[in-house]
Length: 253
Length: 226
Ligand code: HEM
Ligand code: SF4
Ligand code: FES
Image (cartoon, rainbow over all chains, first blue to last red; front, side, top):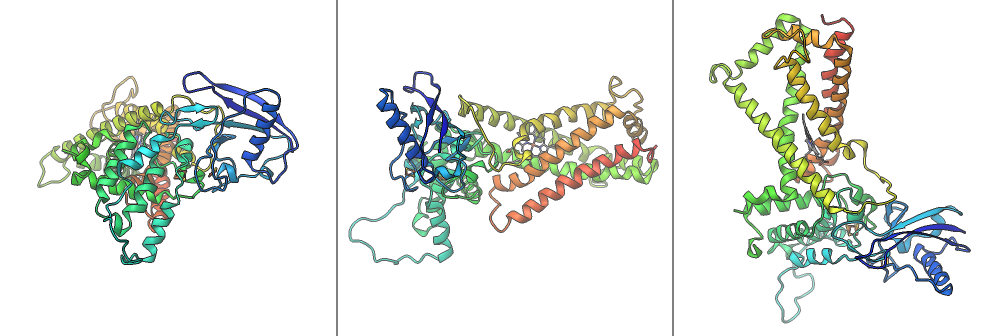
């Protein structure tokens, strides 16, 4: 297969970027999108050019590093799939493919397609923890967790922090990510001690990082590779509003 | 006080939009229902319009409850528009550089046009008040104070006025379709079980309210009301 690529090139955060056009030929239909970019980079290096910088790590859809905008859709055209798990058979031979980095004030471009997502880490730092006693390990299953609760927590915990939800949101809101990270702890018995502090501290950090507000449009859930649902945003709104009314999260104020 | 600082956060602003929005949903539903009294004839309609001033009698005196309601509606719309502006600004700042290529994956038309639709509703609201409440002669030449039925019929005998009205009620319908579902989500009442019910309510409001509103000017245009 042959593709024409329009890729965003930007040397660093400070220098303005622009699109460059490339062509790659002999791409196998079962190659992943990242393998196709590897081919392009080998070609660029062979010709003495600068390879395209893109983030990746596991290449099996579990680490959340590989987020890029492919033809205007976060992680590309296939639902519930990270860019590394997207295969070229989902494109047509001869397609023009536009590749851009996530765009948000809170995600500055480091180089080409690589963005700084530390803002998401700081949201987790603000409240994504539980209090646990150290010392000897507790017995397994010593805290009973009903199956539906465990399932809900697992659904939320599937979030890999890729940032596609922010990238796809017309408001650049990080509500789906924050909702997943608050949700998976807030439904479990182990998360109860900090429940309302967590919601308030994490949302307040999200605001401070410069993300936009949620208007319930749902583009986030539609592109999320882990299919985190909008229900978690409703849950976050509930936990946050209740937390604020209780005066939670004030120890950092 | 923590709770008092809510208005500075995006979720707090959204909650303000949801509460002020539900107040206005109550208003448009009641107003639409009241308008249908035009089909009962001039006397019934004028009696209804006059009756609004006596709302809550005998506990409330002449104009008392109506004044309270008017203040509530004005405060609500001011807060709603303020929060809309503020969130729009926050969203603009959150993405200084836009995408070159962008494809909508699932969002419906109503949800992505809330901001434009809101402006259409606001402008229409002012025109509507000038025409039928304040009787500004530049926009309603035949206005007679205290004759609501006459004012209504003469207003909608103009085709351009009717068309503007129809555009506005369609904008309102779209706003209600996303807004009704969105406010449950914002206030945290939505979940997997509630979702279908809330979608159903949004559909019902988005169809019934515009159709009810539109029926009156269309009836005037067709000569059914005169
Ligand atoms: C009859 C008048 C109106 C009604 C019944 C109404 C109702 C609503 C409701 C229920 C919501 C959802 C709130 C939430 O999700 O928390 C909403 C959102 C919104 N409204 Fe209104 N509204 C009205 C007028 C206006 C006006 C005049 C404007 C602007 C000038 C406006 C702009 C917006 C915007 C920007 C949103 C947010 C959209 C979103 O969250 O997706 N609305 N409205
Ligand atoms: S919620 Fe989904 S899209 Fe957002 S960061 Fe987590 S995995 Fe990625
Ligand atoms: S590289 Fe790890 S999820 Fe794609």
